Image 1: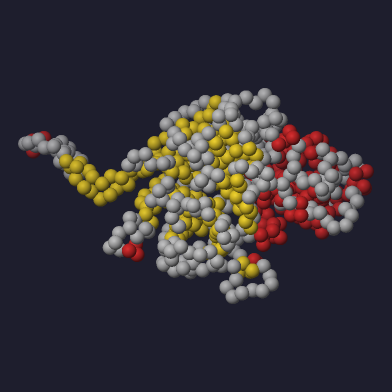
Image 2: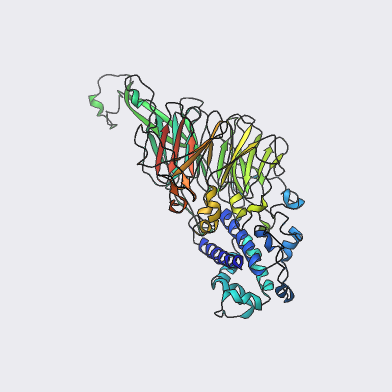
Length: 183
Length: 432
């Protein structure tokens, strides 16, 4: 499964980028880290064979490959936030870039926002909300297997390619996957 | 024909002609600004006519440290925009990630001489030697260019400023960061108006950032901003104080056959420019430049492939970070030709009328003074002609991100890392 190997490689590269972004001069680059987190999410979905993961791949001729029922049976479930935002996309027909009505209009989803004038001293305490990085780093510090290590305690040296099949990983991944976007 | 001016500075981060094309400003990673001035054409030296020479150099921004957030603020100049000239002085805005500054550029070619109390060097005279009164007179001196900071617009941005744009009213300008756009008055530094805010209530819901913005060249109420999702939003400041609701949304549906892990990255718009006419917009994403008609939101009217041969190499380009390079784009004066940079010090021009395109190279070897630029070709397998470059031998460290076109003439400025190339076309050249 070439695309799974590529997905794994992309996940590893992406994690490395997020990790090294922390020490960058000039502070975290929000744009770049957002793009990396989107790539990471797509690649992870493909790698774990989640429903919707096929969206990241070009459509293949012939019947689409059957979803991997083994993982689904073992308790993996799609992330709640993503399911809410995207519904259950039918792949590969739906373009992943088509958004729901709420997402299309950025103003609609943010109740309570009012126009404001920025005074001479805008809230100086507002920061770029990079506090979630700390928890991210402790996970990424042990590389790809570190993502799965939370469930099992100490990180064991395992072949990353095999681990996913044995653990209900999605539950442990839930906090960090949303934390990435919180850059 | 072409001429070459090459100046070695720090890595150039922005290039901008002023409204007449007489001045050309560059900003670099070290926070410095260099202004070039075009020599007036003279009959005595016809070969030197219209060449650009250094006019002034100054340090615009210094590195700063935000102790509260333990963040260093880079001094790199992200953008320079000239103000339309309103008197003898020239003014420009320069910005780094956080602070925008207004600089005034003035010439001094006379100085007063003949003070009563001071001597030539400014030292106080011994009063006993002063026996008569004289009136100081202005005497000519060597031209001196002075640059002074007139305004500093600070504390307006939490995120990194990516663009600034001066309004056609010549009184206001806007600055955009990843999530917000602010409107400033050029004379007022202690307040700004927030006109766009796409920061979600919960940052975990962030899916899109602002990548570039520009005011319409004629309609002072209109501006456009581009996003990392590849969309453009045209906003009308008359509609409401906060322009979160766009007037028009320009977006092209994704081509499903081109989908990959990197589809979202390569659709992020890195630059948007209104045409001089104000009728069209030009956008640049990683692989293409697109021309949009303000009257049609569903898709661009023209799409040009800059380097489609990179589509199969996106994973490697992601790995070496090249996929995040932000290329700029430019219109010529008549909006008939568009230009953008690429790798290997190549830059591309597309003629919208003839549909011809050309690839040129900015390098010392191919750019001797008054030499003619030779078109280059990247071969993607198949027949390879002599002088073709194969995709695998492209140098991805040599990238042309910043280019500028003179407002009225066929003169272009190309920033290749830390070298600036200026090419002039004395004769109408054909695209081939």
